Image (cartoon, rainbow, N blue to C red; front, side, top):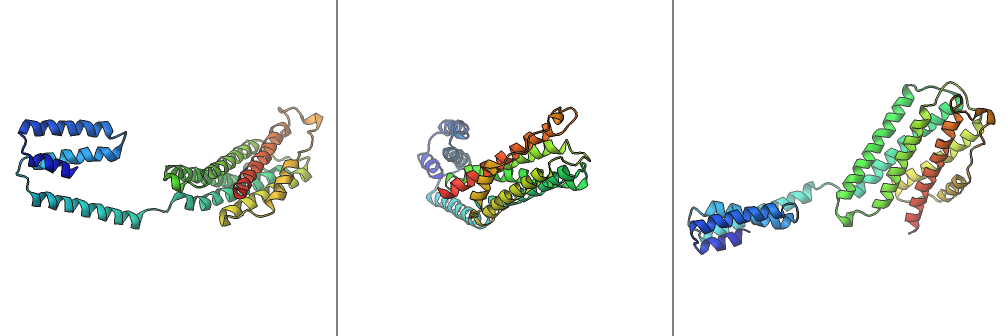
Length: 273
């Protein structure tokens, strides 16, 4: 842009022509700013050079000095980018997602314990909820940054999105369950124990995957068990949701199993590919 402007001024055009050229460069900059910014900066450079040099004679030495300064500034900017450029988000996401998985697992285990033995919405549970929701927010923020990275730095984006969304849906299902906690003990402690062990195993394999990039061989077993897991039938006397919590809680527990199975499956299919 600077060379083009200097070339125009070397022709010594009359003032009206220079002013018209400045107006055209402003218009073209506005046109390309949202469409092709790389082209737009050429026209803004043209405009600045025309404005600065139109009031004085243009010499080769001055033009070369300005171009040298521009080139030096560009090289310094590239050097600063290499030094201060942040790590690509795909390298940071596993650690952030691992934290979200751990927080959700703690939330899940605490909620199931409250269901099994009775318990209210107390301070430890509130802290677990806040930790899980905060970790999910961090995971989605990281996911958005990954989407903004160059295409060649987006490896595993779909898998990352599936994990983040699945984990958040599990958090939402747990939040529904928490609404129905009270001091009553469950009528199905064995089923809840099996549910907790199953979810713990599946979650721990996902956490190891985020830590090491390798899915443990036990994931195949957890997938099979998750697919076969069934909650006990609700007692016919407890089917009224106005008086009993099973009609509210059992669908959410089934949803948790489905989501966890899907998360393990997407990771396993990705590693197999």
